[in-house]
Image 1 (spheres, rainbow, N blue to C red):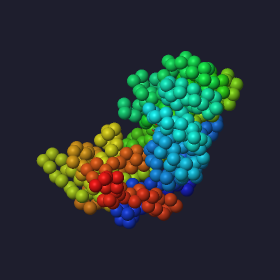
Image 2: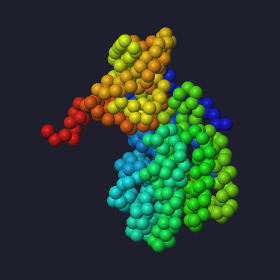
Image 3: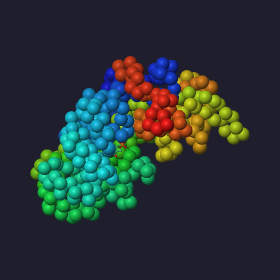
Image 4: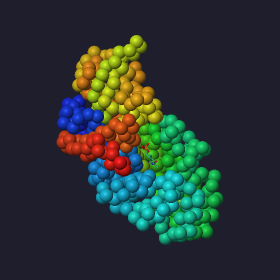
Length: 407
Ligand SMILES: *Cc1c(COP(=O)(O)O)cnc(C)c1O
C-alpha cells in the first residue's frame, strides 16, 4: 500500500491563523494534500500505463493548476477559458484535453489552433470536424455508454436522458462519418457521473468501451473520465482505487492481446484530487434561538458554497475556535435573503458569536461555483504549501461589483 510519511493534514491552529491574517470568509487549500491524492492515484494504477487529467472545473485557480502540473498531472478542460488558464499555468497544448459540451464549433476550432487534444461529444460536430479537418487532427470521441451512476441526478451524466456523449447506439453513424471523412480517432471517452463508489461501474464502462474499441483500428487510449467518490461524512467510503487499478490493468492487458495494440488508460479526476485539500472558514455572526431551533448565522451563504443547497450535499463542519466546547445541536445558515441552509441539526462544539467554523471538503466545486448574489463579495483563496500560507486570490472589493457595469 502507498504510504506517505511526509504528509501532515492541516490543523485548527493553521486555519485560525489564516482566518486572522486574511479575514473570513476564506477558502484555504493544502498543497501537500493534493500531492498525497495524486501520488495515491498514480501508485494505484502503476500496473498499466495510465494518465491523469485533472478536471480543473473543480478548482481553477492558476496556482492550483501550476501545482498539479508540478506533480506531473495533465489537464481536462470544459471551456476554452479553462484551456487558456491551463496554457498560462504552463501546460503544453498536448497535455490538455478539451472535453466540451454544446459549445459553438468556433470554440473547437480555436482549441485546434491552440493545439490541444479534442474530445467530441455530438454527431453533428463530429461530422463537421471530419469535413473540415479530415484525418489531419486526431480526435477523441465521447461515448455515452448508458450506465446509470453518480451521487445524484444533477451529477449523473451517463443515463439515457443525458445530454452528454454520443450514444453507443449511434456507433454505426460514427463509423459512417469516420469512414467518409477519414477522421483519425485516437481515443474513446466516457464519463458517467460523480461520486461513484462502486468500482464495477468503471469496469462495466471499460467493458463497453472495449466493445466499441474493436471498431476503430488505431486507438491510443481509453478515457474512463472520473467520478471517484471521496468521503464527506465520517462513515463514507471512497472509491477503492487500488482494487480498481488492479482490475483495470488486468482487463486492459487482456484486451490488448485481442486488439494487438497498446492502449493507455486515462482518467479525469476532479473532486478526488482537490475536495479534501480545501476548507472554507467562516465566522459565526449570530446565534439565533427560535422557538424550535438554535441557528448559527455565519458571514457567508450559498453564494460562496452552493453545494449544500444545490446538491443537498453534506459538508462536515467543525468549530475550530472552540473544539472542546460542549456538544450542542445547531442549524447552520448563511446570510443570503432566501432559504440558505448549510446544515440542519448538526452537533457542533458550542458555538459563540465570533467563533470560526470550518467546512471540510470545500476544495472541489466550492469557490468555483461562487457568485456575487445579494451583491456580496467573493472570498479570498489561500494556498498553504510547505507550511506557508500564500494569498492566491484576494477577496472581492466593492469596486469589483461595478467593474463591468456601465454607469
Ligand atoms: C466534471 C468532470 C470530471 C470530474 O468529475 P469529478 O467527479 O469532480 O471527479 C471529469 N471529466 C469530465 C468530462 C467532467 O465534466
